[in-house]
Length: 583
Image 1 (spheres, rainbow, N blue to C red):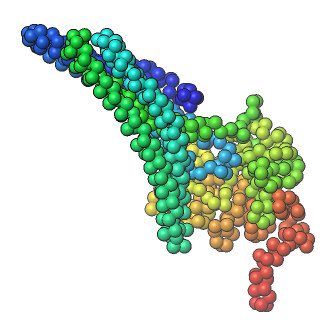
Image 2: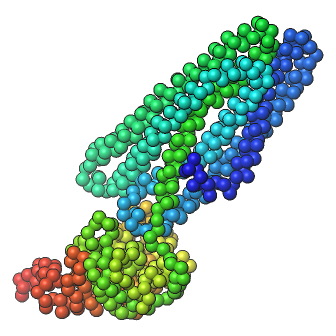
Image 3: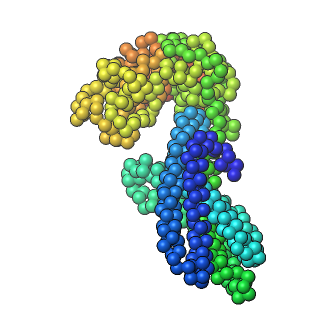
């Protein structure tokens, strides 16, 4: 029960619904076990003693009990569902909230399909036990307890004989739970793997079709689907082995009841009506106990789901606001790195090695180097997506971690190499970082990003609804909207991570011209593979294997026979040859 105890904070605030539901269930169970008593009275008092004038009273009493039971069942089911629904509403919100604040380190290894499975299938699995399974378990205990009480009232000896097989049932149920719980945990993981495969396939459908890999993807999904099927079949096998044993134990009880109970009636130690009542009551015990496997099944699924949910809730947030964090509305944007060393995982190589540089307010810093050289790592540390292992990063003279996360990120505008747009209007996408932005501000940001003209050419202009991930726009158009989104928040620091890689040379020239105006008064970091994108920077930092190997202006670095010059020669070789031939 440890899993349920740890998730108590989500369902216990709504305990009143659960308690009232259980009270009404107690009424339902009480009325249910009265039926055999009415049967005993009818047989012994009305039929055998020939008191037929009692028939109307017995009938009316029976109908009233049925009506009362119907009302009690309604409140039990409604309040039980309300308890489960309200509980998982809070749980789902907590999970989603947790996902928003988990560090990038978590998402480096997390799979989208697996997370979606936890927020949907696992949450629903946990809810189903809260709404239905838990009540069924309590109902089983109450129904068996009350039935046994009446049986002992009629005949203690017959009740004891009937209970003789119960220890065997307890052992069987215990062994069943030991085997079925790991099986359901395995099913949950397999389902998450299958969901992840579907999500990846749909996201990468352009690549699949462009390489004619449809049959290959069908095969990969078939493997995941087969694994899910095999695990379910294995679990069904466990159920198939244990359920007949539990059923057999129940029927042994019936045989013992009929044999010994009949002998008691023959010897005058038990009335015929009491034997009939006993026969009904034993099914009130056997039925729930035969369903005990189903309840254990449900409990195991719920427990497995709860464990997977706790795995998310227990994740550590290693990037967070410290006590007394500085809340700054506007920063100057002075960034300093002092001997910063960073690695993403303890088993990874160092991503940055003793990085030191100074970026005064309003200056433009270019970052260039091969893939994996550490360029993006620098900007991710500035945004506090990760914390450095050693060294310190200063922002306006204060350690970066001394500021609140909101203060830091509200003052940083980021345009990533792969632009992500939401399935909403263009206007909402541009103003995402500043929802209260005026239309004039939104349009001004779009104009600076060279996006206004193509937006106005669309059917509904700025109110045009975009498809998933900006479907319907070219790569360059998506990137320009992302640039407008960064400009709209009026950041002190602007980070352009290969921001013009998806646009043509003519559009890049227009955006660069617009950036010259936008970057005035802002500290700007430009990550680029094209030298043309950063040759105007105040300082260019050349990265290699996590280290700064060269730094200086474009002209200074071109005159050095180093990394930058080699990149320059490669990129401008064809152009220079063309110019020479033209001459």
